[in-house]
Length: 84
Image 1 (cartoon, rainbow, N blue to C red):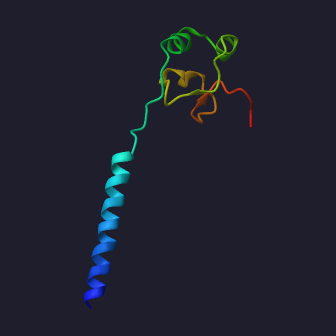
Image 2: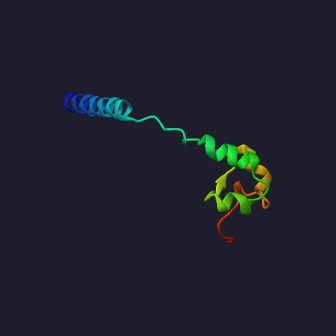
Image 3: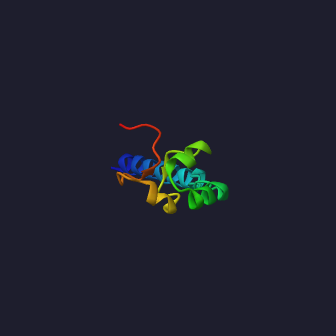
């Protein structure tokens, strides 16, 4: 019985120390970089052809909500480079 308690104590100490190490080493998620030039290009463009000429395609509507007007199939990606 005494050995069981000692082993259980050691295991719980190892578990607690591993969790503490994991939480200390965890890196926060970085937000995507939102380019103001892309944002202004989306705002002024009349269609996807104009954006593609500027090298802008496959625009995430989550990152750039103003690109929703170019997302015809409503899948969350505007001005797709290729159809599936």
